[in-house]
Image 1 (spheres, rainbow, N blue to C red):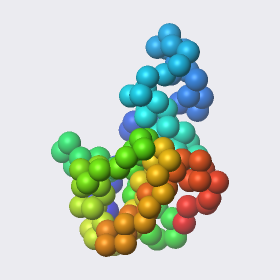
Image 2 (cartoon, rainbow, N blue to C red; image 1 turned 60 degrees about the vertical axis):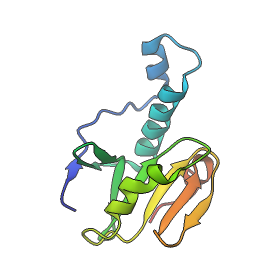
Image 3 (cartoon, rainbow, N blue to C red; image 1 turned 30 degrees about the vertical axis):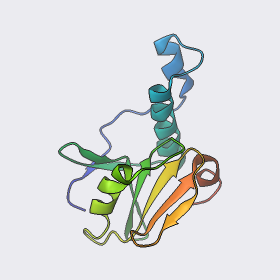
Image 4 (cartoon, one colour; image 1 turned 90 degrees about the vertical axis):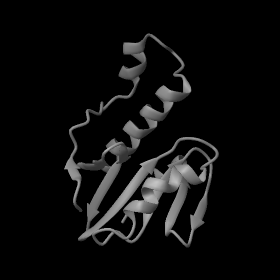
Length: 128
């Protein structure tokens, strides 16, 4: 997919290092989102992400000749604006579906082919 980039972002193999560097025992909400993104990237052994201007998809998983965009939105409510970048990505260059990793929400947005899945379940299934 055009705009797909080799991961130039840095991810830590031990997310506890983030807390240690910040001097916090309990991460704030923003830091927790970054930690969860780090966990998802490490879980998938992800190599690519996508960025165009200010828009970004956290992971572009390429498997079995299919590109699957995965976005981490670690919160309980996924609003319409949270779906915009994923909606724009689906339909481009053969991308037919996408996944948003949430805190607790499970939903299938049929019209958009977006699966919203809680982190705990995402980590239990193999993404294909």
